[in-house]
Amino acid sequence: MIVMKFGGTSVKDVEAVGRVVQVVGRERRPRLVVVSALSGVTDALLEAARLAEQGDGAAARQAVKALHRRHEEMTVLVRATERRASLLAAIDALFAELEGIVRALAVVEEVSPRSKDAIVAFGELASCRIVAAALEDAGLASRWLDARALLVTDAQHGAALPDRKATDERLRSLVRPLLADGLVPVVGGFVGATPARLTTTLGRGGSDFSAALFGAGLAADEIQIWTDVDGMLTADPRVVAAPRVVPQLSFDEASELAYFGAKVLHPATILPAVGLGIPVRILNSQRPEAPGTLITRTVEGGDGDGGPAAIACKRGLIRIDIASTRMLMAYGFLRRVFEVFERFRTSVDVVTTSEVSVSVTIDDRRSLEGIVAELRAFADVSHEDGMAIVCAVGERLRTDSRLATRVLSALEGLPLAMVSQGGSRKNITVVLRDADAPAAMERLHRRFFEDEGAPSERAALATA
Ligand code: ADP
Ligand code: ASP
Ligand code: MG
Image (cartoon, rainbow, N blue to C red; front, side, top):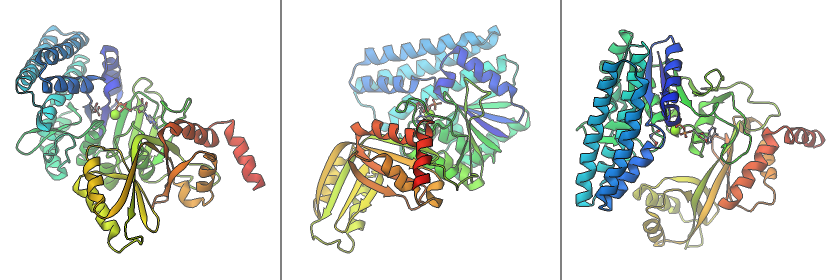
């Protein structure tokens, strides 16, 4: 069996869902369909939650009403009148419930992380009903499933961690029988629930992660991520003008790219696939005939004179410089530094060290003040906002010792605040000013992926 996950833009309107129906209909293997909320809906739900928290009940209800209307309009894609009426009734019931929640929260002017999850989950709870009804209407026997009954998580609202074992049991009892009966189950991504049935979410972009968790639990033959681009591109298309599709990536390459900003995959997506070696394919729902990107355990062609597989950037970061006040890298200093980040549950992206100091970057600024205050108890600390990570990723970095130098030389003249080559040696990462990130990306892209740059690069090598 396979898992087919469709992102927000792939279900954004009637035409888009029509394409999903075609793609799912053409597939002959047993399949579980995972869907995101219609594009923009999660943001709109968060905005409704914000309005409720401010006590602006009227505006919050207005926002819910607009979403209700948008979802109601989607029901035109179901032609059978009875089926359409029952979809409409389901949508009405969902949005009536949501309105009640928002109304109550606006009265108390308080939206806890737990309540916020209860609100944002409605996007996926509604979209999966629509897609299931559309599939049925096209003659594909399908069944809508409540993600809260399927994905079991801990209670870290907004960034819940899955309980793989409990989830696998639910998959066995709820999904397997449907697949065996030839039905196409449709479930919302991103959403789960604690064992005590409190609604949780996996964090933004988390539908990819849901798909991978379900794929691993069902020992799928393939996990397909259907989105709005032709696959993993050589660079973020919002930063670089004409990126190309990367046909194949290893699990490690894809993970690093996702972690360092390639939004097309949620950074945790690859993890569940790794253990079982399940291939992950990124495909374009607007061009289903395009081959996409295939992500597997290993890839061919890790040697030779080629460049990195792709580049990525992560922007809007803070760099923190921490220097031991004892002037020497005292024993235990690093442990104390990282314990502070652990206490504040703040993850560090890049780390570089010198004899007496450590520099790190973080993107979660919520605890910055507390972190700095605690570090100051034993170190001199300074921090700078407006930084970015630019990184080149590729198995080839491990085998071609000249590649890291070639990457750095492409950045000549740009002030680099930190440089790091990961232990896996599958990436080389620099930290620079955010304002320099687009130029750095353009230069790397030209050097390694564009026709104009490639020949001169080869020429440079030939004379080296
Ligand atoms: P979905 O709604 O399908 O989950 P996302 O918006 O989360 O889609 O991810 C797809 C988007 O990721 C693309 O439209 C593109 O702008 C962005 N993106 C950033 N970096 C990359 C990359 N290296 N390759 C492909 N897409 C990328
Ligand atoms: N709808 C959620 C979001 O916008 C999850 C997802 O689309 O992956 O973040
Ligand atoms: Mg996404």
